[in-house]
Length: 216
Image (cartoon, rainbow, N blue to C red; front, side, top):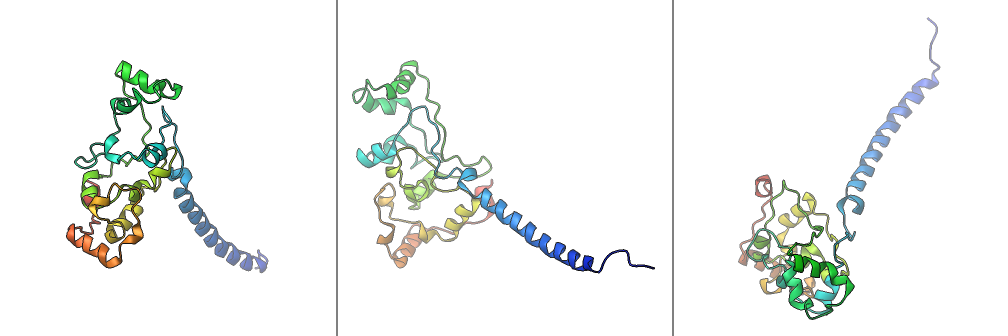
């Protein structure tokens, strides 16, 4: 029986199969990079807000403590978005005639909350408790970044499960003294690994990575 395919087809078949493996691997690599890119995670992207609130000014320049606006972080599972009344405590006097503050004044006058776009929005299928992390010595800037340098708020971390697990597996890398939790100027290099581990032991921090701790 005469040969149907030229012998070179054997080489072509091997090259095609070998190349397909690299193509699939390359496609998966590109997909992984896209999924972790700022375009998907929202990292470093400032979102539109009803008022261009600047943490850089209020925290960095004025020196407001996080708890002045986010009053529930120490005792509740969620960090509250401050009501308009909190803004008006200062801005009923300061910059009261600024056009930028018109939405705030209208909100206060009409008793209608401003519709802020949440920047750090944990998925509904994941349980996160702010107060627990605060009590365990996890600083605000550990998760939210240097907010005192953000003219507009953006997401500093991906909030992906891997990022959470990296911290839970190595809690000593994130812990700081409780009195420094709300400090935006705290130097992470000020503690030695041994001192960090002492804090982990003192605060009774456990490396909890079981699924049910976050997915309840």
